[in-house]
Image (cartoon, rainbow, N blue to C red; front, side):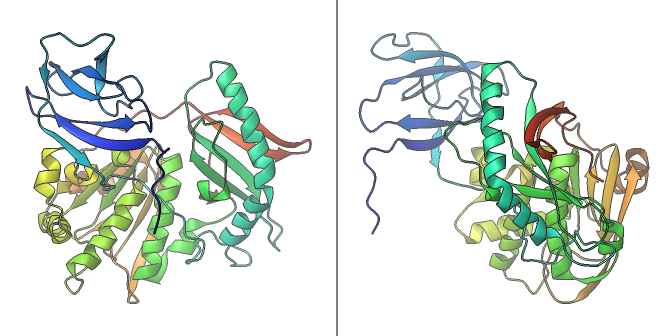
Length: 397
């Protein structure tokens, strides 16, 4: 039996609805092990722009989440005496329904294979990262000190470039990345990184052909990891998730696996109305009512903005950028041993929009801006160095 830590700061996640328009606002309330202040936030509503108030513990220290906090008041030192109406509809939640947790499965079928030897390179790349993590961690410490000491441009990702051993004559280079988080107390580990690319690999040659459903699902997982770094948006278009012989719980597992791979801000998801309804029904079976979640803005945001189309049977998955990567074929989003055909191709954005997006009658929303720089750690003749480089990500070759 685990013993609770009485000296631990507790966190409660809240959704509070604007009393004027009902728009939900998410925030976190901290509770310290000793002294706790009570107070008030005055908030500008994200939807209607009206002001309203929220009462909470530790108004100075608690994270604001999606709330636009205009003023903070302490009940003892400066109690709030204004006229803003307090939010009365509030819900505490512990859901992880919108948590992103992308993974790269090195034990599954490799997609980064040497074109000369046909050997998978992913495990070798991971072994090199593991061997060098001490040097990489040291450079990361230097980067953090520099980042904290001076004003630097916005950066989304820390990237590591590392050579991958292979018996061929090519110079394979692996590109790993992780989201940039400036935290001097955190330790950088190899598990923090995702593999975005290994140079000298022909993905068209590896992925185009006849493969099992399970292979194609793994390949899609790995391509999404790649696209999270180097593309502006990801388009998922498939009429079915799972198939008719899957139970609701099995279908929900497929949904959860896929949704955790994706960045909700940069994902456009198209499927049939019945498939969206199937997700909500499967969620209901676990005791979560999608409509109640939506009422407090807690539903999965990819599902919330999902597109519906009945008259299509295409299965296409695209990393959208100036140059797009298109993965398509006959397989729906489901594991299994049966064989399906697949193709992988690179094409300019304007052609992809004309050939794939417009026929589906989709209107892509504007993608959120990406940072203009990335931080790169790589090995030189003088040892490992970290540098600030142009562009949101390195070019993947």
